[in-house]
Length: 431
Ligand code: SDX
Image (cartoon, rainbow, N blue to C red; front, side, top):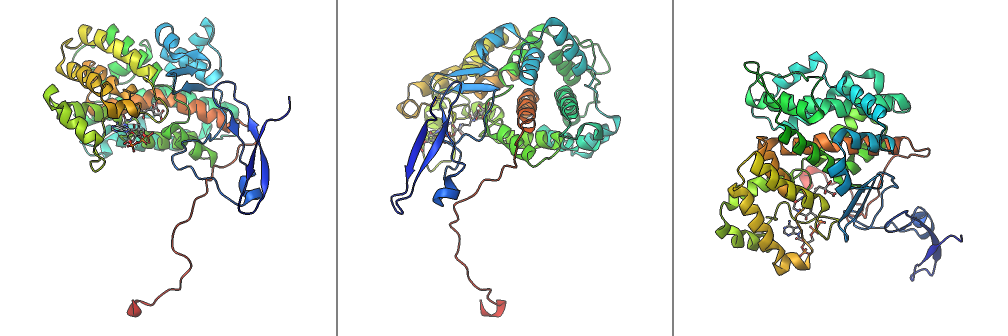
């Protein structure tokens, strides 16, 4: 088939170039602009990367207009109902759903990497008691490369695989230890007989003085939420992990950079910000005032949990979480939780408001997830940590995909310089 191209003409110089179009399997094709600067002398300019594909990937596909999300071709709606977090983790790492034996072996590997080096325990004590758990996560995960010299040769495929297993396995243990430090309770070791999410709940909520029984509703709810958060194409934190990885940094440092990027309230920090916002709104009668602030360009306030760079339709994850939220609240929390009622009313009012309709601002994955975490007894400052645990699967899968490429190169964007032209230094006594 003849190569499809686009023609670019510089109307100033009259120069014209043909740029090849790279075909996608699904969704928009991409114009390869690799020769653009060399042949036309211009950079392309796209702050925020609204129209820019930074890579090609086989992992996750999403369609913002259709509100569609697939992991390795499997619709999120099917995986959410039929799969499990570790099964989807296997799918993301290896490209196919595992057989029973493959899943059993993978689970055994993850379970047996869940402990952290005993020397790491003192790291947590070094943080102030009221340190935000995300601050602890960034620090401790970044330090893992100091312990695992046997899996940081990124050019060795088996090192990459071991590092990925270790990251997926240890995130719950580090997260729970961060939480325990913030409440002054002793760290709890993982229990190999528990499920991935059951172990996390056990490490967070059990205390030495009494037996802790994992609530199956909480365990299943967390597993489902984690599936929905595993990956999401080239979002801010995943792009951060890829850029860090492109320099050859070790995998633990790359994941730490992803955790740092996820923390922002415009990204993964939004789930915590939603609960803070709902608390601030307090009552349905205050909603109009907050909507007015959200529309006021002079006011930095945004409606947390609404809007998305890609989804210009309902975030499919939000739809799934919304349905589950009611079930969890009725089984675990307070079915008439005023926060949930307030969230439903806020959503209803916003979705009928012209400002939100014109801008296609719908609830995103973060709008309801915090309400479920709250019903599970997870404190607000741990919400983004939950997101980071789940997204570690996507981060390691995206990192492995990039590092495994033949002609992988360091990511190094250019800029449109708008600073001062050259000028000479002025001695201080003449300024
Ligand atoms: C996640 O990228 C991903 O995939 C992320 C994520 C993932 O899984 O990795 O899906 C997870 O981060 C979800 C998003 C969580 N963030 C929030 O809920 C924070 C609130 N949302 C906004 O900050 C915002 O919607 C963003 C950051 C999510 C998207 O920002 P964009 O794409 O840069 O959109 P924009 O700011 O250009 O908005 C377009 C218009 C603007 O108004 P106009 O200039 O056209 O008049 O919509 C307005 C914005 O002011 N707008 C909002 C709004 N979001 C956008 N106005 C009020 N409240 C909002 N929440």
